[in-house]
Image 1 (tube, one colour):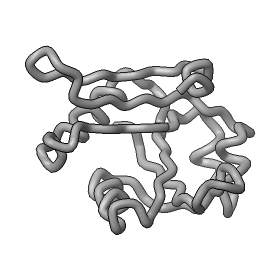
Image 2 (cartoon, rainbow, N blue to C red; image 1 turned 30 degrees about the vertical axis):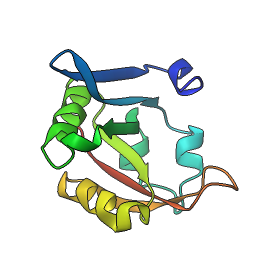
Image 3 (spheres, helix red, strand yellow; image 1 turned 45 degrees about the vertical axis):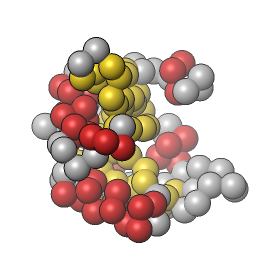
Image 4 (cartoon, rainbow, N blue to C red; image 1 turned 45 degrees about the horizontal axis):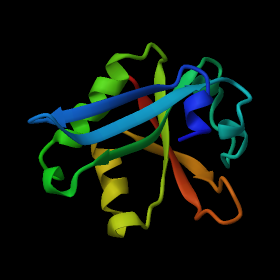
Length: 132
């Protein structure tokens, strides 16, 4: 969070229910040539990288509110603040026995490649969709 918070156009959304935090999402703008795109394999199509995009870095919801639509509301609230044409994310396809990847697909994201942000990181799937 320390590093992500200093990146261009960082935006965070916090969700509350009954005065208590229940979830969050955050992301930032990435430009053509950004290391985010440089680590993706194969190189993403130029239509995705020629203009700035928003990278959804993290989204989380309290366990008691999973499968209630809360995560989607938070996701959409974050995107409502953005004007980039595309939103991209990297997800671990093995997390939750693939449930997270399936959820991302159900929200309209499509797989466009893979990335391994660090040697200690698992290989992640790079996904993208239109912001609206």
